[in-house]
Image (cartoon, rainbow, N blue to C red):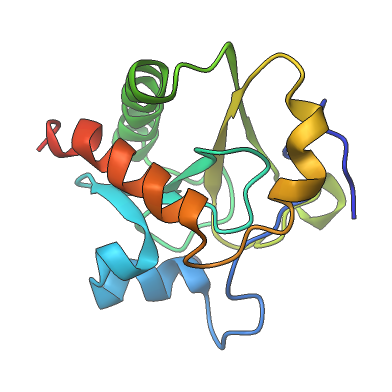
Amino acid sequence: MNKSIYAPWRTEFILGQRERGCVFCTRYRRKTDRADYILYRGKKNYIIMNLYPYNSGHLMVVCNRHIATLAGLTPAERAEMMELAAQSEVILKKRLKPQGINMGFNLGSAAGAGIKDHLHLHIVPRWVGDTNFLPALFDTRVNSVDLVTTYENLLVGFSKLR
Ligand SMILES: [Zn+2]
């Protein structure tokens, strides 16, 4: 397991690697947002929490459409993805008070993409010294207290976007 925080999008961990089909398409379609830790649905993208976070509040902006590349998005999809990234920046800063935020894409398996066929933008809040906490956070699993608490906290911010 890669414990480096300096390039947090190098390797991904997300629930559902053993699911059939695309986990992002499944979550887009089934509309069980609370159970899936979906924080927000835009017209063309949605925001979901990473269940195997690098840090508390690790989000992903996911295109609604099953598309692998940034270049493959329509201008409207790209524009909304960037807008949701900006809103995420504002909400994360307000609710979690990180000292920094990493954002990035993994395009292709050699770049560390766990789900390489469906584009998603990683957003990882950062705190000075947070590498110390990583081993513990790597053990975070579904329904852990941290995940639920952080979801409820961030949902307050994202619900105001609706
Ligand atoms: Zn998909």
